[in-house]
Image 1 (cartoon, one colour):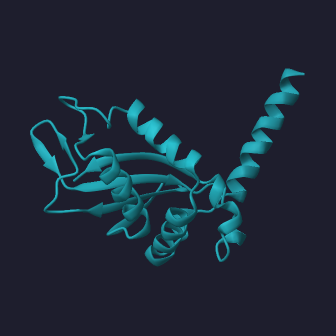
Image 2: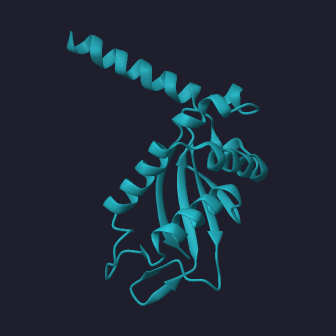
Image 3: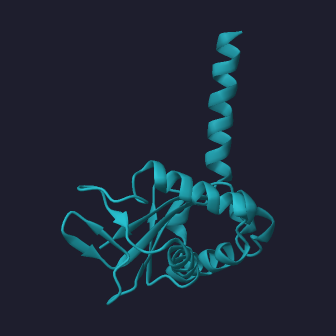
Length: 153
């Protein structure tokens, strides 16, 4: 019984990897377009999970060593949506993730130790978007994970 469960789990994981969109194969333009669509269509629970994870990581309260946001909540929410919809740059990570980054210089979005940080970074996991849905991702956008937001360099 145990062996059957382990085998089923491995099969499922292999199937998920085959199903997942490989973000390393996407052009910067494709990553930008996906981020824009996600910013427009992400649901409240997706944003709520993003802020919950960011809070757990220590980015929503002042801390002496961890990077934390110094923006008021309303401005931070707008900045996060703008970061997804109009990033300055994107970077594919870990096969299915993308880092979206936007610099708001000269405005400061956060701090780390004594350093002012003017950029906002958001990690997104696109693993639930199948490769064949790249041209029409709308049906899958509610399943995409907004992993973490943090101030960055």
